[in-house]
Image 1 (cartoon, rainbow, N blue to C red):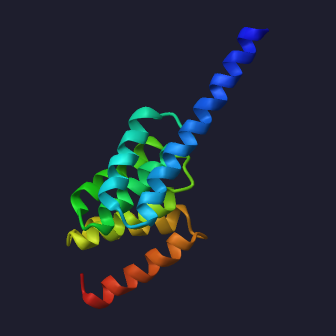
Image 2: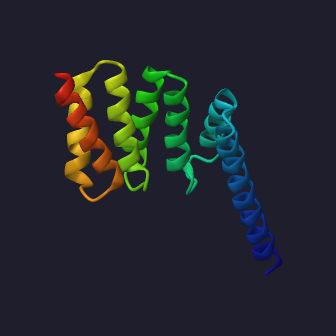
Image 3: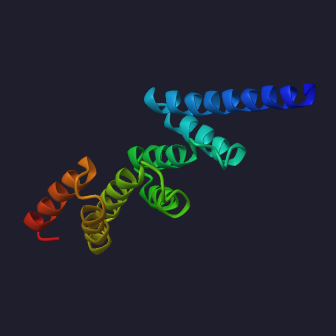
Length: 143
């Protein structure tokens, strides 16, 4: 029984460490320290690949690259959310940002495809509404 208790204590220490590591990276992102946030999210994903926060961490890594205009890397990171974390609640947001990122790269057909797919798969989401607005803007721009 004591071994089981020790194992449970170690497991909850790991969960607490995992949550703290995620929160540290997220706080860096919120504070606008994007380079630091990218480093911390990458470390988090390496240290805790099976974490319940991994899908979110992957999304925020994409977001940190997007806001720093590192669009090619942002495409990679958002695609990883879709590929590795298909059950993540961040899927609609990752699809939206992937569409926005393709738009920024002037990859209009890829942007359109992702945004239309988002609207089809998650029609009642805020992300789908925003995707519709971007698609309308693209139509008006003729791209």
